[in-house]
Every structure is written in structure tokens, then in C-alpha cells.
Image 1 (cartoon, helix red, strand yellow):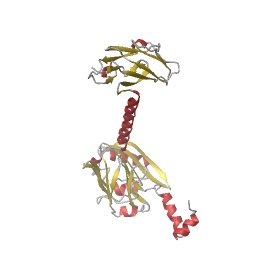
Image 2 (tube, one colour):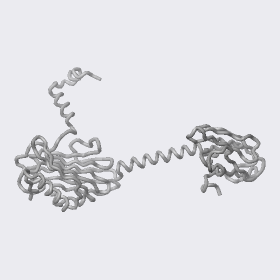
Image 3 (cartoon, helix red, strand yellow):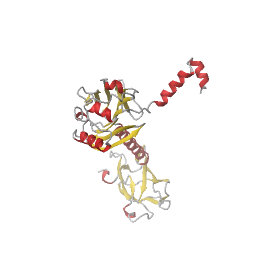
Image 4 (tube, helix red, strand yellow):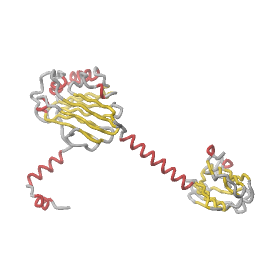
Length: 356
């Protein structure tokens, strides 16, 4: 890392300019607003909105007359305004910051397209539509022409409209800080400019699938793939000439696979059996009826191999030979042996998915 002094010499910038830039960077994302709409949007158009602002700015931008000497009356008036606009009000508070009162309302809506032109949002125009496989958000914010007078003593500071978007953003209409952490787009202007009729143009293009659903689908796909790969590694029956390898698992109280067909007289069948038990004292046995070799005893986490060479066609059971649970006698399966050079395909299955 280059020391700060060296960086200043290399850049030719004055220390005062660099300090100002560093301060601006540090303050980015920590701005406070005198009046703000903050919207959490879902891909189906539903969502939530928080509106915060000085009472005089509520009057100037939403034509809501408020008496700062009566906070309870202010809260009741704001609640009534949002409820008659069709929103479900969740919280209304009055707080004090730097000696000024701020009225805060949090509410939920079912369709963002229906909140424009309502009594609660005479200053906000917003629409969400699907277009070409993507979601397009368009809108604007501006003080309504018919708004009540007020707020002239509150011209300092900034106002903003911010959207927390639900999916990947492909483009936006000159958001102040681009796509911020948390998938946020924000537009802002000076409060004085807003009082004078300044207009914010809002817009974004995004994926029609939410980040959450995409993440869940990706995770589910990874899990399914992992299961498939695990099954392929642990449950497989593969022929290599006259050698057949059966990869099998054992866990209370079944073998997987438990039905195999397509074996032939003269094959050398290798059963590779893995004990999946988590308890250290639950071994499993394995034997094939009519087999000429001794049974296997497989400890938890262990894989053992048995060679079986069928001498005649038929259906041969294989089973657990070590008592493992009350369902021990259910722990069995069947191998179907066909005559040598038979055209019966090699297949395997589990329970209801067993070959017919």
C-alpha cells in the first residue's frame, strides 16, 4: 500500500482537496434527509414505504396541515391520510433530531401502481410493469402544484426518494449513487430546490426474478446436484465386460439399491457396500443367498466389498446379517440373474422405483 503522503505527491493533489474527498466518501451512505420516501419493493408490486419529514414539509409536499405543538394530532392525521389511501399503516411516530420534529409513517401496500395520485402520495408518481422478460420501474417526484404553502422556513438540507429493489438491476435513470449496497437506488435534491418545484426522474430496469428466489433456486439446484452426484457415487451398478460393480449403501433399515436386474450367469459381481450410520455401534452385515463367500460385517462409515459369482439364473435375495433394529428383517433386496449373453438390460432401483 502506498503511504498517504507519497500518494499525494504522485497525484499532485493538495492535502486539503484529498481530505475533502475522503470526507465525502466517508459520509456517502450516511446522509440524513429533511424529507424522504423509502420504498421496499417486491417483484409482484407489493411492498412497504416509510415517509419521514419535518411537519412543514409534509404540509408543503402532501398538503397535510399539521400543528407541531400537538404531536398526537399529527400522528392521527398522518395515519388517517395513509389509511384512506388504501395502505396498511404499521407505525406512526414523532421524533426530534437537532432540535426539529420529524413525522415518520411506515405502511404496506399491495400494488405500487395504485399508490400514485392517492391523498398520501400527491408528490409521487410511480409505475411497475413487465417488459421483455424484465421489470421496469418508472416514476417521478415533484411538489404538486395544488399543494398548501409551507416549509419556506425549512429550505436547508436534502430530500430523497429511495427504492430497495428485489432483483438484479440492469440499468437506472441517473440514481445519485448508482446501485448502493443492499440493492438500493436513490435520487435526491436540495430541499430548497424541491420547494421551488424541482423534479426527480425515477427509473430502473431489473430482473423479473427476485434475488431471494434466484438464490433459493441456485441453492436448491446445488443441493439436487449434490444428491445426484452422491447417488451416482454411492448408488450405481456398472458393467465392465463380465465384471459388474454394485455401489450400495446400508442404513437402518434398507439397502440402496435394493432391486437389481440384468446380471448374467458367469458374471463376477462386486458388491461395494457403505455403512452410512452415524452411531458408532450400529454395524450392518451383508450376504447373498447361495453365495460361496462369508458374509461382510461393515462398521459405520466403512465400505467393504464382496465378490459373488452367480452360477444359475434366478432371483437371489441379499440381506443384512447383523441385527440392527426392530426392522432388521426388512433390510433385504433382490438380484435377478439372467442366462449368459441375455439381452436383459442392467437396471437397478429402490423400493417402488425397482425395475419391473
